[in-house]
Length: 218
Ligand SMILES: [Fe+2]
Ligand SMILES: [Fe+2]
Image (cartoon, rainbow, N blue to C red; front, side, top):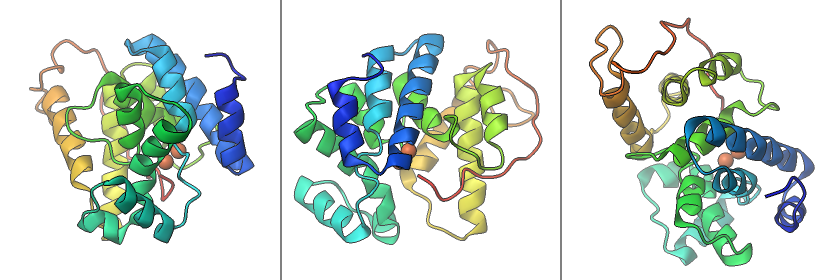
């Protein structure tokens, strides 16, 4: 996919200018990370571009769209309807933008929470959304540095920042986020334990100082 395509024009028409710039940044970083970490760069670019298609919709419209599309609305989505912009956006991309790849649609659907057994594409889109150049929350530079060495370690750290932030706010935590966390901890091992499946063969950075949270933006 080139930089300026018909799909870009349609996404630009659907989003406020700042959200479109964030989407372009996510598209470019997702493509770059896919090339580095063995995901499909075209799928990553499309997912990055369309991931926030439903982000401008207010909570009542997200709840209505989710109900119309048959998307599960659980206790956490009722408390935080903004989380629905991810699965609703995937369905809008399928219906209105001709995005048909199940892998792309899944990555879009999981970009706000991650989920169980995340694919490389899921992880690439999740972290590109957090670390693209227009993001500026405390801790983003740490994520960018981790991304130079390990996709999984960067995603784990982003999840850790998010969980800290949610706990501090006494906010509900989506089960899919915990499933993604548990999957990555099983892969990479606990702190000091290093017994995870991938811990033995992955040369990642050591302990990193605590950072901020990715903030309320999802
Ligand atoms: Fe985003
Ligand atoms: Fe989002």
